[in-house]
Length: 407
Image (cartoon, rainbow, N blue to C red; front, side, top):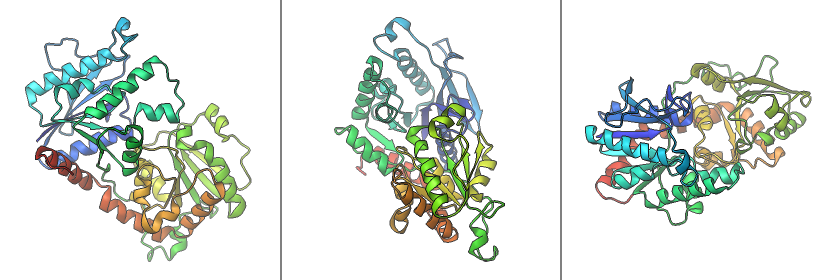
């Protein structure tokens, strides 16, 4: 089969391509499908400052060949007068034109469009039977969780977004939690199909418990013998950054000193906003990391005693899966894929981020049982969140749609 994926970035092409969740998803999906003998193309948006590299509408856009994937690019463009009344009109028109152009040449079996403020509405009208809407996040989530001002442009984009969700023949999301949230927001839309994201990541620095000489060494501690708590994410209230300092304070007061490693581009103004400026509570040490090479980030996961995620919202939540791939325990709020990863016997590690003492207690339990808990999470990652598992589920969905089977 031939697939066209439309999104914001494909590493290292496009707007959000620098190891972003969407870029990571597109790469893993395309490479996985190519391994199965399918053909994959990607159409991504360039930064609006660059502009379109294909101004001539009579020819197809230029492309880059990335690991066997043809990556086409299209720049943002605007019609200033029309944009006042119909935001993103030129972008909707551009996408529709580009997809028609590419489909005439390559005859795609499926076209997947990443949701972005309903901009896929033109493609959906042209290809209702083979268009798949992948919902990573929605403008409605931003309005609710980021307190975005609901002005005319936002209301217009919300209406277009809802229209595309309601009329799509196939809506795909990455977690059951996100599917539930969408049904609450858009009651009339069809039930989204869940295709969990996945990727292949070798384990870095995992130590066999017997070789490690018992559970103590496998708990992973810093040079002073203190546990290492890892936090990965954007400095944002939606990611629960305002909840972190009270939890750390409760942990050091009740249990032991600790080292916190923050992987985040959190600069001084945001650090002041979230209370991360010294002096820290006694016994707390914080190390800051910004953008890291993939290998270094995975090594931080493997070295951590536990990953802490206190987000208020996640459509998927890559950090919890990345931690599980390295055999690192996870303590998380019940958002994104965390309820599925931490189901059953691990549900005690799903916490209320607004109750610091319960978070601190869960952190301590995870640290004390790191070896056993990490091994179980590593197995769950291998069973559910690898590239192989994602491709199997995705092909199951599109094959059922092709045959008209309700799944």
